[in-house]
Length: 414
Image 1 (spheres, rainbow, N blue to C red):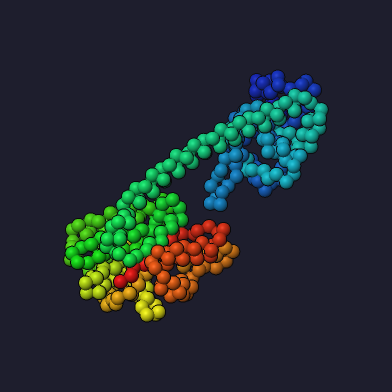
Image 2: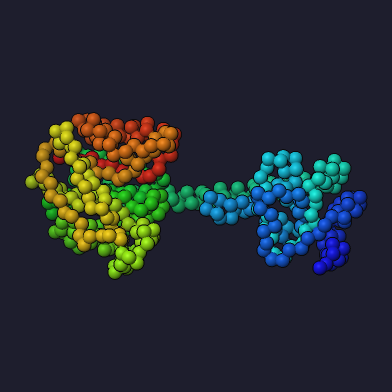
């Protein structure tokens, strides 16, 4: 094993560069400090360690990092030759500062300075003060530059998502189309993020008005991609077929979604774990096909139900407990339900975002029971007043708490 003296001789040219920056008396002190060598990438110290030395890099480089909630490494800064760790130096004066985890990037040579020397050198050596001030300045400049890069990248991402919102809005039905097909209606549409995984879709096929309310896997950008897929497949499906039941629509849409996502159609239940990504991709959906001439409708649901309010009574129509997508226990077909309608009936279709919203304390959800009661309380109002009341109620409920999911509620009066 090499002694500190032998290591010092090996790296004399590197040490001389350091010594040229410092006063002679300080150089003599540093010559008495231990020198350590590390090969390759090594964890030198963890954030929880009680470290008694400050590293001063002579050769190679190291980094100081922290870890996010997913255990991913987040770089604080690199420490290169002739540099030290400003966090470690500052912690001498401010013991509450949490050190990061120190890791060598490559073969590394350090001088190990006892923490007990830092305050003494600061009061005794001007060159040491200048050295630490220079470190502070370098770290501050790095921080400013990194913040600038993050801000620029954040703006690029925000601009891209805003443009995606324009695209998503362009493929949703226009208010004019909705009003032409559904004279009395409201749509409360509140994406959690700029873009949404919830969507609605309306068209007319022969004498039937088709209405879809859907909730895709995820929200934000991933959910929006799924919603664009759903809208695209619905457009194609109704272009190819004009005489079709609500359940048949879900059956065909399920096949198309699986093919689009690359899911195999012959996976066996016992071969698929409950947490498989296959199970997570897809969408919950209510599809309603209205024949306003005969005052009847067909309904099929992939998890998503609908409510019918008639004469101050709320009727709950449930869908099948499987999504439009892969499911480990799916039935061969969705169930087609036929419902007779009466004048002044109101149909409510929705995603789960409203009932799942947490209150201002973050301790409880709005819940289905309260949602049903609210609909019964407001169904006598105009459709626009109902929308405003639903929006005001959920805003009051959540207060300053974050919106946890996309929210979509649609009301249709017969």
